[in-house]
Image (cartoon, rainbow, N blue to C red; front, side):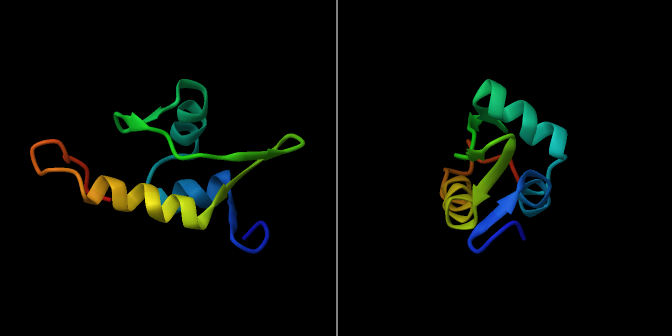
Length: 73
């Protein structure tokens, strides 16, 4: 873990079940799995994701109607 409450890009990708390159592309495009990408913070050249925000992002996906939610997160 990067520091309390935050994950590195690699750890966040593992948490979300995607490749780190996919998460990196989502930072550029602003879209992950067809939805707005999770928020991230930069500290110098390093990127961090709040565990709390990632959990909220996953809950957002799980709360989508079944006909929209085609992901298994």
